[in-house]
Image 1 (spheres, rainbow, N blue to C red):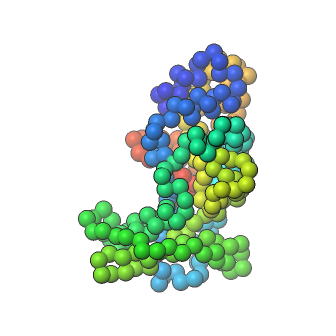
Image 2 (spheres, rainbow, N blue to C red):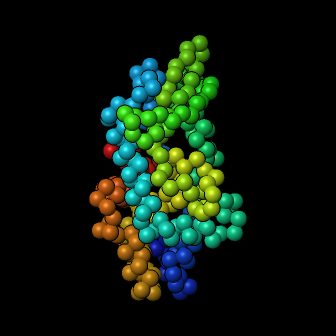
Amino acid sequence: MDDVPNLVKTDDVKDVHKVLSVVFSSLPSHFGEFIKWIAEVRRREDGGQNLSLEENGRLSLKEEVLKQVQETGLFKHVVAFLSSLTLCCRNAPTLSDENNLPDIAATVCCQGAELLSGAFGSSERYCCQETCIRRLRANGDKPITLVSGTVVNGSSEQGVDVLVPSCPNKLNCCGSGPSNCNGIYPAGNDVLTALLLALPPETWRGIKDEKLLNEMYSLVSTENLPILLQEEVTSYRSILILPTVLTFCGLMH
C-alpha cells in the first residue's frame, strides 16, 4: 500500500503488463501470509460420507467466488503476465512451501483437530498420520472434494474431514498450458488477482498515462464486478486497512 503508489509513477509504466511487473517485483518475501486459504473442517463421525445442504451451499458459494475472480478482466491480465515470464513456474512468486493439497490438508487436519477438541493454541502436539482425497457426490450434484485425515495426539486418534472448494478452471501455477496443479483450491493466479483487487483504488492515481490510468481504474472498480465479488472485494479492502491477514474466497462469510 505504501510502495506501489510511488512505483507506478515512473515514466516507463505504459501498459497493464508493466504495472503488474512493478507490483509483483516489489512483493515482500512473506507476501503469501497476506492471504490464507481457510478450510472448513468437521469430525468424520459427524459427517460420514454425505454433505449436508448447508455444507454443500457453502462450498458452492466459495466456488462461485473463485469463478467470478477468474472471469474478471484483471485475472486475464494476471494470467498473461505470469505466462510471459521466463521459466515462470520457477520465477513467479509462490504462496508458500506447502503448495500441494496433501501437505496443506495435513496441516489443516491438525488445526481442525485442535479446534474441535477445544485445544487450539495449546502446547499439545497433533500430528496428521495420513490423508485420503476423495470425490463425493452430494444429492446427485457435481462431485465434491473431501480430504479425510487421521490425526493422532499421544494415544488418542481422531478422524477429520476437510471440505475443499473446486477451482472452475484448472490452470497450471503459471496460468497457461496443461494443469500441473490440483485445480481444487485457489492457485497463484487467483491469489495475485485478489491482492490487486484488495488494494485501494487510489493506489493507481500516480500513473502518468491517462489512458492506462483509466484502464486500471476499470479493471479494479467494484462497479464492474458481480455482486458477490463486489462484497468480497469490499471485505478485502476493509481488512487490508487493518494490521491483519486477508482471508480469501468467501470463507469469512
